[in-house]
Image (cartoon, rainbow, N blue to C red; front, top):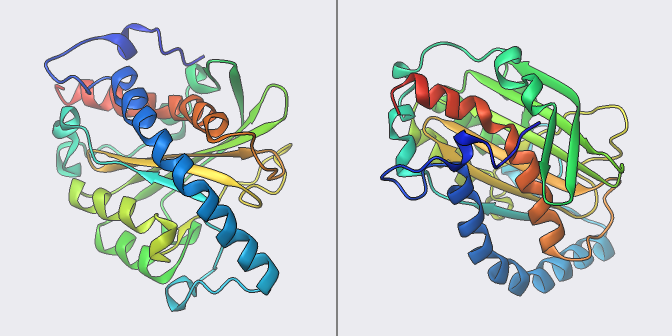
Length: 258
């Protein structure tokens, strides 16, 4: 079980935002007001698309076009992960046992508890992504692996996707985070299908992404089946639980001398 009270998640260093406890919660709380302010606009856009019967993503989403999250929040890299900025200093490929350890088969935050119901690690980054621009940038910045984990809440009401992309440098990770913003029409990563997870990516969903050195970590959540959440805080808190699957990044940072 991933627990934000563990030593790794509370240890302090000279970098205030180095450890996940600080990294996650403060920036997201500041963003809640912004998200709430634009929520009405987002919902209005969704209604217009549904009523008009169209979903024109433009030429950039021409390959395997899918559905991006309704709400996207991308943030910059923490300076505390600088030792992972280049894959040349972190050359060992990821493996499934390293990413989806027993410790992250159940992840929790507050009242939310999720169980891992499916996982997949591939070297074919382009095969699990849609959108011309995103695919081009994955190629340009040397994407070598994509890890995806599908999570289902204990009460079956919420579903989540954990996504980790392995780029060759921080510059590439920064660009991929920009590409994943639905407003760019660049594309997105396809969700992993798993037993019990209903129509992930349909309806209202929210995703949060951040570079961790040369990795991009995305936590993507929705009500199972795509129903409208009661508030953005609902998906915000659920996403923090899903992001708890990022333990492998912190282990890599320790090995790199961070």
